[in-house]
Length: 249
Image (cartoon, rainbow, N blue to C red; front, top):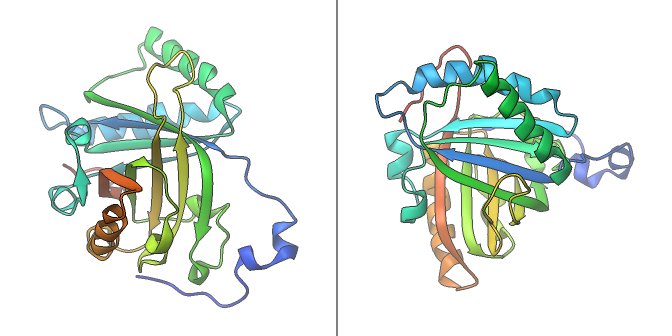
């Protein structure tokens, strides 16, 4: 249900804005396939109750978002190239910058060495980016700096070749706001690069599949211009704590 609030939106209120802003800049997004034996729910239990909370030991971690694709989500994709076809699970971490990545990896190693890692999903890869812009829908009142912390029903992930403003994508019903990122090289010790690509996360407060249908014609028009091309444009449901099987591939 789309909610409208009264009052001045934060991004139009200098008195609110001068009190502070987020220092989150870097997104580190891990993309994975569904579980080969259908144990997706068991994986989500482990990741949500064991692995993900430990990441907040890292001083530069500000937020994390876990989402999953269903068959209906897959059918609603506006783009999916072979590189990303297998993606059904996404975990996105928001860090203050690249300096957080070495301790992020060190924590991974420490957990593995002490029997605390259960790699159950085959990885598709990572995308990493530096924040290039933020926007919040005026109806939600909260500012773009904090919209990722607003409860969400899902997210729309957009990975594109090239770079362009989001235009009217963030004005779509059901989109509470969006952050977008310029792709960068994966900080060491991770390997790979997202350079030349733009990564956008649209934060949704309506059914992700319904929002995807609204976004489709806008994306078709966007890509027709030639400045960017869609590599992955896909809706995902937010994982529901303690109802792990509600949205599964």
